[in-house]
Amino acid sequence: MSSPQTEPTTPDPRRWWILAVLSLSLFVTVMDNAVLTVAIPSLIRSLNTSIADVQWVLDAYIVVFAGLLLTAGGLSDRYGRRLCLIIGLVLFGGASIPTAFASTTGQLIASRALMGAGAAFIMPGTLSILTTVFDEEERKKAIAIWSSVLMLGALGAPLLGGVLLQHFWWGSVFLLNIPIAVVAVVAALLIIPETRGPSNRPDILGSVLSIVGMAALIYGIISSQRDGWSSAPTIVAIVLAVGGLAGFAFWQGAASYPMLPLKLFRNRNFVGASMSLVLVALSSGGLLLALTQFLQFVLGYSALKTGVAFIPLIISAVAFNGLGVMINKRWGARAAIVTGLVLLSAGFALLALVSPGDGYLKLVYALVGIGAGSGTVGPAAYATLLGALPPERAGVGSAVNDTVSQTGQALSVAILGTVLTAFYAAKLPHNITGKARDSIGEALVTAAARHDAGLARAAQRAFVDGMGSTAVVGAIGILAAALLAMTVLTPHPATAEPATAETVDSGVS
Image 1 (cartoon, rainbow, N blue to C red):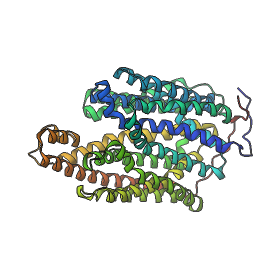
Image 2 (cartoon, one colour; image 1 turned 120 degrees about the vertical axis):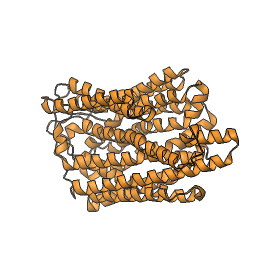
Image 3 (cartoon, rainbow, N blue to C red; image 1 turned 90 degrees about the horizontal axis):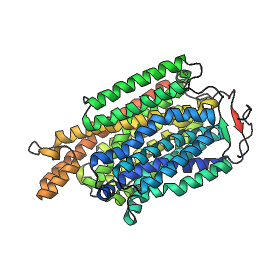
Image 4 (tube, rainbow, N blue to C red; image 1 turned 90 degrees about the vertical axis):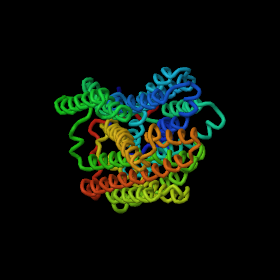
């Protein structure tokens, strides 16, 4: 390990190339889980698997990813952010091969879990390296580009998946990861400088407690969707999560060299930005899943056409990234975050006004509003969070952001999914019974088998009403996030303290 050096005062001349490599690494991880949802029908037919097993294909990735994030961030600070990024890319790209050619559901679940481990090392590394190579002047612009890639990967995945599935088998969506990972690894070795924090002793107990606590929490949330909150698996997982996370918090306060110093949470901007992001994820994650069902089950779109339908949201999100940077630069991050959250809430309010007979055009207005809000709030929130971190804690601090966002997304799917299902069932006529009350998908299958057009129309109306009620819940949650940001964030966040023991190896190795 190199001896400690002071951080260079001149910007790295390769910084924009570095950002391109980081964006490429981010894109492949964000795109992967979203693109899989489009491939599920083809996967079920090819492997002759059940819906419950397919759920585990999705969940194995999420549980491992969320469970390892904090540990991966801490390891990257200690042993090197470029090193951990490369390890993550090798794991992710390598695991994509058995995933693409899996012949059984068990093989697919195992390889997806390994991909989740790779993603956990990639995700925080992209933000932490970005923080160290860009100065305060250019960091906001770099983060705007980074967050644009984040949204492009998540929202563009259905379109890309639909195109691939038109011509190839379901495993083709994973083969795409391999060349991207290879290019990113080579570019990282050639372009990205190694950075790390102080060489303290590893916090092994903290790592174990964070893995157990976060993995159990995400598993408990997922289990609640399948088995209910009162089921034994859910209760055991939640108890284990509470114990693990409480033990982690206690140990971080008592340890001589904690993985996640709790003093980070004394910073108003760090807490305000983190909580704003988690409230956005909590309020919107489940609603976007409802949108996909609306397009396919109500409007009758194919997987490819569903992906195309999200293009206005993508364009709006990317375009409004620039607005977020401009507001941030002129009036401060708080103004940009609050503006973005209000726009996002307005988009959900427009979604609540959509009715079954409106078709696609009215939905476009809601999609543009949601994209505008997401694009405006993203760069300011991420820049505020990173600006509150000392550079030597960039890795684990970025992992905190990713962890709370993942938790918010999982909770959103569980809570808003439950709200949507409850409203859907409540809006159905009482004479409709059986599986048709469980979901619109089941209702349409039943209607097709019975040649019952009335049942199909009733299910579609009930679903749209339920989606509208869920959108109102989401809009209220996002307005709560705006109020939190207005109250907690300082008008003009102070820049991060300079590193005291940052090690920067400027050469390539």
